[in-house]
Length: 240
Image (cartoon, rainbow, N blue to C red; front, side):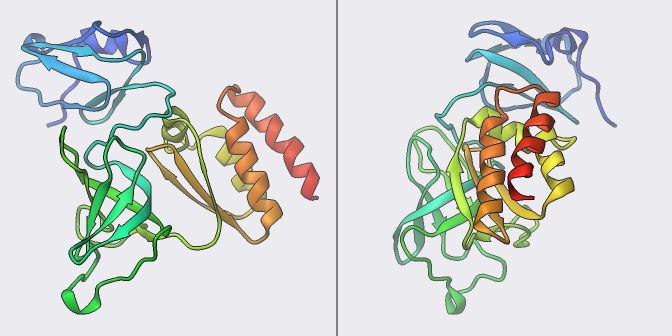
């Protein structure tokens, strides 16, 4: 049965919180299980914010604090863009912009066996899922979803990768589709992969279109929904 968040938490969802603010009172949420994302910590029955930002909630039971920062702290189930920095017999070392280099086991692929180990050169861009992320340990990655299927994960070829704040990357992944991607998708065709670590990969039929999409995304962070759509219209006039 789906549980409803307490009135205490509902009042603060989508509101700005500061470090030390108590955002959830577990004593008033009996028989409910919640998941804590980035920016929150538990102290007995109190869930408090660890950083300034906006308290977010996603069904059925996840809370986190969203803000715009370039530093990325890995969390389990995050989808990220990583760059291969080294290759070893049992795993690949991957830079995901976290405090420590992550490792990707050579068998963490759909149907992965010792006979079909993938080969990645240093500098290869990968779309990966964070499997484990514990303090003081190197994060573990995978190129499969929770069911073991490759899904959208794997090497990203061609295209253009750029970096943004973690807040912008979360908005790009939000539902419903953020205005800038919605406006671009109605006019041009392109591929995109967004990592929660503040990296975005874009690929289109032409270099010009790829640059237009990348510029539109980077310019959208401080704009309102209406301003994003106007900005996209102006950029698209350059390729008509």
